[in-house]
Length: 358
Image (cartoon, rainbow, N blue to C red; front, side):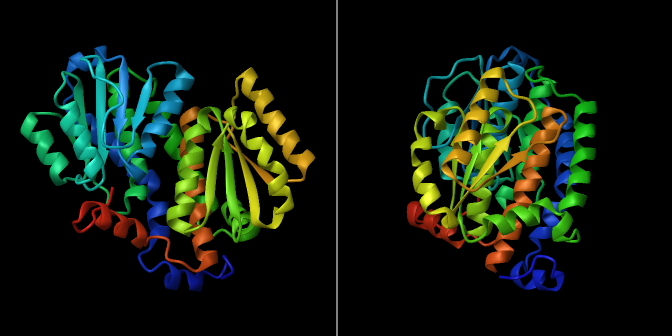
């Protein structure tokens, strides 16, 4: 386990330089927001009343985050599909957004072929591959993912493309001022969390030290419901560590009964209570209840409170905080945060071909 302020140790554990790609997230978001303006979106798409976002892994998480934002605004329902088939029949009122970093993800290709049989609107967001070829063949708008990184590190690009497209169609309330304000805040957040900031002043390093060597349980709700999944998967992929995600208020109806077991094995578990800035009156009670139960049962936990700012600022700042936490956890474990050989091998076993990234 290295000390996180020993910067001379970083290169050995992170030879591909993921730390620089974390710093580039604001520029990635800016580039994507500008790119989506150049794409021709049919005017008739403004009449869509249901968004379906299809993808796997790092390409799917954008759907969770967009869905949480749309739910807060109560603008349009968002369904996220991870798998080989759609859960319902599509109509011409559905906008289907298919995301794949490689453009060759087997599940997303299957969903394209199924969705293409209906009269729904289709938008493809990919780095190229077969998905891009199919979009061009059938005349569907295509936006290229211009990011040279791991699929999970392209979240900013995918997120801002989807938000930009929905904003242009009037399906979500995000404008230029919202985005520029959020990106300014994101740049400031990066400067507070990057490796040059000592542990005594760096929340991400502090959290990583609390979590290292333990299984992480992430409790999330409201605007940050999907963010819990993002943090969980980043801990999995970057730190190669154990993490679980439960959501409020659902966990109060089942998972709380495991708190005694957590308390007994306290050195092996740590709870992160992820809380958005604004909560409904119902969720205020849910968060208060779970925190009281954690204290009562003697479970070790820490509240991770979102920035007191706009929803988009909260989302982007929590994304980069989670990315840095998982990155520093990887350094603590002395494992390469970029390498995902088991994911690649799993794709080889299921597809029978050399694996491609999501």
